[in-house]
Length: 558
Image 1 (tube, rainbow, N blue to C red):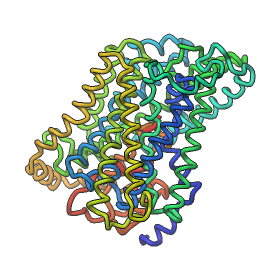
Image 2: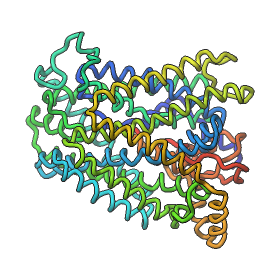
Image 3: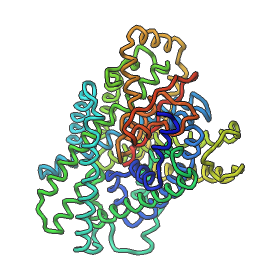
Image 4: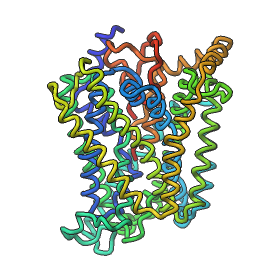
């Protein structure tokens, strides 16, 4: 199919674009985080939506219009500020899934406890740790022998997202109709002063980054910009509608949850807690909660399985570009394009992060550390994007921009957008850090410095030309391995629907591992394959390897 025909066939309208954007960040796993802030949820969600999500989508929109090909954040950062920071970006989009996958998997223990009417299991650190380890190692092994992204994608979406949303909304509305606003709940009675947080109260401020985390991954909606009818008008209109919808979706559901959970009793990793309480108020049988929890357990486990292979393909692609030592074996892959060594590396490091449930006392505290660690690693990517977009206005001022922040030739509005984003990140990080305990703070700083910067910069500095030569020779000797990976990359696996940041990164990894098309072929990206169900047409490899880390729809967030 010609590029022209394909672009016409796959043109995206406003409503479709709004749906795609909402799908990136719709999740119920962050609802307890929002609900725990009580009436202040409106303030935090407004800040996260207007001062974080909106600037990110505007910046991503300009990037995607300039570079309408696979690569996403890594390509954008590489083009803007160099290959070193592009590699760091790709690395961050991989390693943020280590604490992120543990965070998502933390839902499993309370779901199992609710299934068997033993809620205490969900509050037990050791049971939570064991549950995560057993499930994640099982799905890691399955990914070595089956294409789990294709096998379980839709099942996980329905059981882990769609059904829980409908059930929680229906029961929550029914319960609040019976109880009204409960004075003894997390929400409590209304007072205007409760809408603004007490900036000396660490108990509430610690949720700042966790709420911002809801929107991580939303930048991937920008890959559709070259397929939009009237790109500038539709992109802006679609983004505003999507952000309003996501804001309302989260605050309404969080409001219902906050009104039913007693003050000080919110279980951050237990979305079934509110369902049990809704049923008590309505006088309905508890087996509904048992079935709900069992379905969510299966859905989350399947989603985790489907997400695990995406980053593996990213790292395999980077290894074949000579960015990792050949002896690690990351360049090797099976017939599904998945590297056994990468999958096992992921599982091992994720297992280490799971030990936080032993090191950090209390399930809620450990869960918040995981959310914060994931958020920090991911938002570093946004800082690099902000720097890159500013630099590109100087170094590539003449490059065509279908969507340009501020329009015309002025850079003033872009500077305002970038400063607002960076200030929001800085303030959110500050309040989150100062509200943590000393040892939690040491742990978070250590993760950020070592995992976020130290290791990737060391790997990049240590790389040798011989790495790529060795890998090229090995692939030439085993062409079937290269063919398997290329075939899998070109297939354009459907990106997972509504997912949290870890999954968004996983989906972006799948997309980014594909061979890029030329700049002159708008719309030939990960979204094409996902939306059309057809394979993306392969194209010649570029002279200099582009990014592989992030072009897709579909952990992030929630």
